[in-house]
Image (cartoon, rainbow, N blue to C red; front, side, top):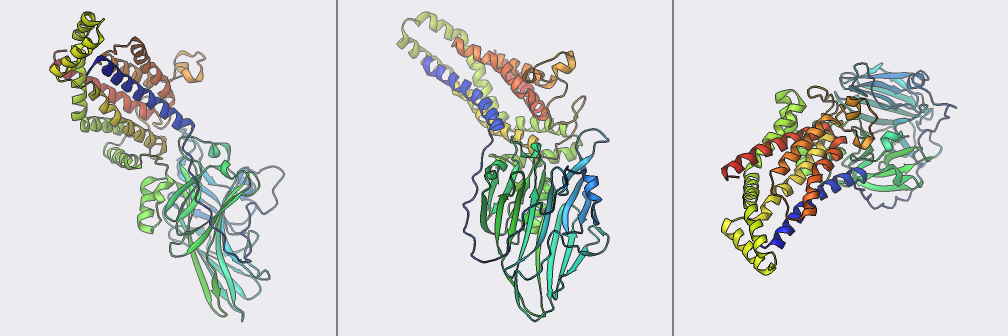
Length: 558
């Protein structure tokens, strides 16, 4: 190994570290865009169109949710996970509150409101019904006033709705709710006439997202769907041209995805459906499906069932729905990212440690220790190689002084020295290459897992998914520019990174040495606005690396 090759290895090491920063920053600012599935041609039939969102007249000024709820008769919804109501007019799901989650850390902070009536600033609701090619047939719509049997929907008390169209057809709707966030809607039609009709079941979710829901970031916000067992994700702006995207799928699901919240139509795996995604009026977006034609003979009844999810992206719960209800890839409503094979297991490990310890911060630290223990053999060889390199620095300096004018001889003697000492300078890069996907996966877990949202640690850390709140501006009471206004934990992380760097052999190239010296500062400010849980993990990982490296250096007489 000659000096040039040694320099190349150091350049590679530096490039890898810098790439980590660049990739993290680009992943944060420019998330991966997923290409939607290729549209399938819609079957030709003169079926009535699925209604667009917000069909009724809107008020001059948006109403508060409480005001909108007073406008119509409602059926209450209640279980351990959610509360709210269904509007009897149109049998519309437009009021869902998530009881386990608050908007802020304060004790009196309001609960998360997921679905909202159409008269409010950001309507968000679901409807279900029937379509027909017979325009003379009266079908239930958003103005239909259903009659309810029961006053409250709960896991123990399903609700039955009825409506007679005055033409001999009776429409019956059964709504069930489990103990979490899954509704089951079963629509039946009773034909008391002498004529045969063809009906198509449909369902829709309509939404006018606010700025926070539509914003881009490290976690996908927009439309998520599984079409023919393949996940597809669309940003809202991909539908801003007013284009309508139609797909055919057997089973699957489609819905609106926020950072931690989610709604979805879950389709029947045993029949083909036409799925449609569209922007209805520039601000409002709609996801709807139309099922296959069902023939309703005289004197008979037909039924169709569909599921509707409206709740939080609880990973274990989504896995249960996927496995127990046969919903394909339902867990991918959570944006696990490129390293799904690491990110999801990491979450389950953290969740296990949390249940064992009772505090997510300590669970993250224990996870860091276990991960460092698992990587001990590889890291040990790397640190041993770097220790030998550091011990060898004086001899390399002597060779440079002796053969500085004879590069060929210097290369030859340097190679002989490496062979004699059995040193591979590239060995120091291997742990870093392994840690890159590990770091990204943990970074993703701390940003996507609702189980870590608002999870406290000790001291001033009240939310491990948020940046350290004890920033320089808070401590000094001075105006500090946003990028430079970082917390205490990022500073501690930077110091541990600096100490760890000083234990490594210095690059021979002065420019590289200056770049390496700047890395702790760069990473301190870059991670200063990341989830505090990630910074705490990296800090302990650095401390454990320092201890291990110091022990190996002492063993090698450095």
